[in-house]
Image 1: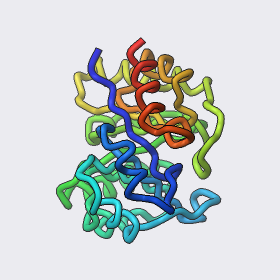
Image 2: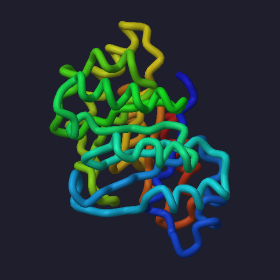
Image 3: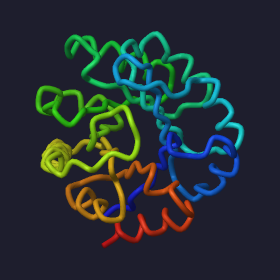
Length: 220
């Protein structure tokens, strides 16, 4: 089994002591940055200005997750502040050609591109995109708020996507986001997840200790 990457979701961090929150998870491979516009999801978070501040404190991989209705308007802004990956939702696009246009725009900036799929969204209509992206982010909660309960019914989707990636010999990584904890991590890793996005499970309490618990659970 390949080494599982941990990607703390900064949405759950304490922004009153941002530097300390980042230092507490400095051993994580990635940082997950949730961008919400109040339209695609019923919440508003932060934008490029905050990401630029986070970038001042770390050289970790930034996976910028755009939960917004018009991602192409803002791609360059998020590239400019240090994003390494930009992940967009298939649900905000009209069709496969429209998604392809967004992915091409991301790749043209030199950063890596990802797609995200919500729990009720079937993945098979988008299977041909998996050869064109570096990352597929499978949501195991409905996006918009942190701290939600993991949706076990999404696990077969993770497994099916992983099987397709293996069959096609692709290099696309699978990230899982939503309700990921030491209790649910073994299940998603067994299904094929490469990256665990976790917010509350890491930042609620001692972040370093919680992250180690998550690693230990993922290796079971």
